[in-house]
Image 1 (cartoon, rainbow, N blue to C red):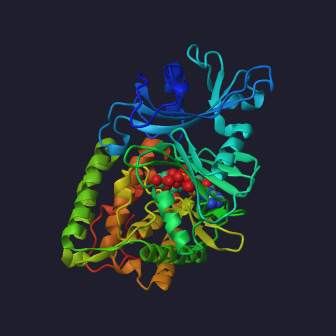
Image 2 (image 1 turned 135 degrees about the horizontal axis):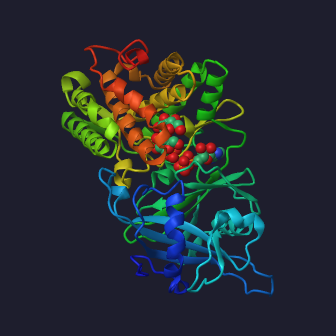
Image 3 (image 1 turned 180 degrees about the horizontal axis):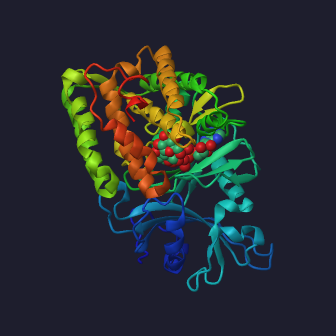
Length: 488
Ligand SMILES: Nc1ncnc2c1ncn2[C@@H]1O[C@H](COP(=O)(O)OP(=O)(O)O)[C@@H](O)[C@H]1O
Ligand SMILES: O=P(O)(O)O[C@H]1O[C@H](CO)[C@@H](O[C@H]2O[C@H](CO)[C@@H](O)[C@H](O)[C@H]2O)[C@H](O)[C@H]1O
């Protein structure tokens, strides 16, 4: 363990701090859902930055035991794992919000991280601050007032109210990050694993807001830290879309009731196409000629090979899956060029929220969390998002007992039809591309599930089996064709 700072200046309060937190954080961090380095031991921590957002009150007076709020950026040292990609190499940086109290009220007991035995916080309760209403209020107040504090910078959008005094609740634990909902009016997403550079989850919603898109909540404020050449985006505050249902829950509900979901799938296709059109208007597009398409195919093959090292069940499918990427690299099959633009990057049913009026919004533009930031920000063929949604209908159908393949086929078709209505291009007319992107996504999912939810691994593996089968020439990607479930 070392307290050496990197490019960020630790506050004076940080001396010896990390050494005393180390024994607490080592077992606690890997248990967190958002911890990206699962499966490898944490061998130590380096302090990147420590900022006191609220100094703890002195015990006794004026208020007995008022809490302190400490903002920490810590680098967790881990041995690199095989095939796990750059972002989970040694030294991912995590954002922690730490509450400190001498006496922990019983309601905060589940948030306890531990009590350091030495150092500046010796004997005090150190806990996850997001569960303490007093501390989440401090965070909101900071976001209302732009400015700097230590390594942190608070910024506000030119437009949009941020109401004060909103009580916060922590959103459910099944997230790659952590979110606080303030008074059912605002939602603050706090990124957990943070990297320097422009974060697409701030960049794209801001660009869409500037273009007056109604499909994405506009950022109201954000929090960054100095990160050398480029800042680290730590959190984004947005309006909370009240009374929304997410597409995943709605799809599972429809399945459970034996209901068709193709009307919603069609509306989702339209919403996706609208967001794509707005992104293409707002941000640069590029043409991918044969060489760039071949390079893209090569990257997908590399990802496949790396994933197969980490997920042995993928091994026997590698030759079949490679054919999907080879076909994409072949201009006679895939066409000689296509347009790439900024896309969502990790679109699935859980990222789609339907309002009480039936209007669909898209959220979470962070991209696939395991990919390096630079890669997530590259223009991509929009079919990447389409493929993500097609996979999601398949996921929903597979998580239903009994498996409902026709339900998924209808949704997949309707989604593409809706997309075509709003965009003018039907994704099913590009079966080679669609198969390549669906394959790339299923491979990503296999890696994701192996790492985070091993019980779910059979879901992407079933798709892998289907996608590894050779495609007859001239086939169209519809429910009766090679991308449908007929081959399962
Ligand atoms: N603006 C919003 N309004 C309402 N709910 C939201 C909003 N943004 C996010 N959510 C809810 O928060 C959950 C997690 O948000 P998300 O951005 O997907 O975080 P993560 O990247 O950690 O998964 C979503 O599934 C959704 O239920
Ligand atoms: O929402 P996140 O940004 O955290 O995305 C990650 O987690 C998702 C699961 O929560 C994962 O999505 C996969 O499972 C979904 C069902 O839970 C399914 O609808 C998606 O199609 C499937 O990809 C996503 O891949 C991952 O990046």
